Length: 207
Image (cartoon, rainbow, N blue to C red; front, side):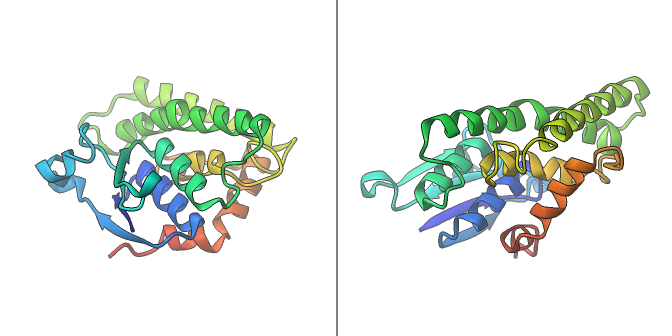
């Protein structure tokens, strides 16, 4: 059985979306980070950096129990375990998925999180910081929009974990104070993914 430790953050939704798309049986275990639950000794045995999401699989490789953290690693693990095609078998196709997966995880999300911090949570108004991250967000939306003018999904013609790694921070653009009006290809991509039943489940109730 799979246990997914989750909270309502962009990275948390990535993992939950990957889980729903995988079709694998699982238990969803909310970890309320606003209450500091991510710092409990029990959770830190799974995620030493006290971050969500985290995953425990009691039927991992060779029948062993395995645990892992980091949303990108969880997405790859679930896609490979489920064999749903979210992470392709073809080595060349994997290269294309990997580059957008890591761009989403390491570059886009980190900038979007800083935008969210300075827009919604920072105790002081810091206009220069907000403008910097707004400009970065829009620049990356332009990169995605250009790419999606040439192909249906980010890694090609098939929906993959690359798309899942980027979708939550696009989906929450209004919370970030941003608009997709200038990005028609990105809007088309966003709306197509939003309509998927697994995505609607992933963004639904969690208790």
